[in-house]
Image 1 (cartoon, rainbow, N blue to C red):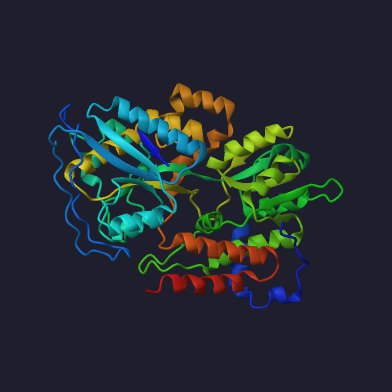
Image 2: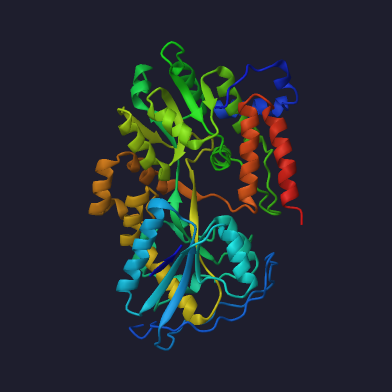
Length: 470
């Protein structure tokens, strides 16, 4: 395989309450608190020329998925692009090397790091030479699928020769292969989940016990009360530290029953009542004096690891870093819990990367699919989960000796696995990367007491509308 390369809070002024959309906010806040070996030793055929698409203009009525058949037995190489770094990059390299050694078809993989990934993919599409396989974001899949340049995977997933067996398919959580990042009305998935992350509430159990509480909070009202109880100026303890993050705030709003975009027009809605309620929570926590905000997520980890903070918000993939830092600073008893929700049914909204295959020749597509299928194996999933802390994709993962041992070392991972039974993907939102940044900026303004929640979100929503205007 060739590998190429603190924000300080000010007291709230009377102006902060101006324009709060009192009735709507009051209502929401009240609610919140209440086949064979012949296959592929396949040579790289010249690629079919794809229409140059620097702006990825949608293609109406894309061609149907080619019939899956065994190509002639010749040498085959596929290009696999990603933007991972550190331990996740190293683990991906290990998995791909294992695939190259063990696949019986002589498939060679050119695994390449690309950054900025989206720009380089667009350039390659314009030249008619896209990679075969990409580890992309949901937003990127949505855009490429709308342009008609991605391979629909339904026929590959269910192929009697090359697809998943019934046992394999049933062992995967349904959200892994669901069409969650395709244009509205398209039920044929153009990607599968990989590197799944789960939002979490971190709890300092030592500090929680000092407040006479044993169980994790289930509601935002409980979080706020405990946050205020933990604040002790003399002892130097705080209730909560936060780094405004668009993905995290979007999850909070979804847990309150909100939507990130209009389901018909797909226009982003940042000033919904639920999102106003979310930033009102943030405003109230900081206004109470029990919480503070920082710009850098690593500062959240450092402050929580000090043992002087009751709550923090992070994700499963970040937990290994938290665990190591807490141990390095002396350690204390801690755990994780689901982020509180308001809707009747408990839910957790997952974010992940997506494995997507670009349209090319039949045998290149099939070779790329076989690598995807390899990455979806239970053994690959277990190795990835152990290395990265990402949520396992298989229902049976907890029963494997490797994950059993991992749970013994990292008991917080039990909570992550338990949450998967009521998990669903975050809805696909066009221009989410830029929109998420606008949401984070609005949250910082609220956290600094510079703007009220409704005003900050109205400004962010206007900017988001400009992103979606052709």
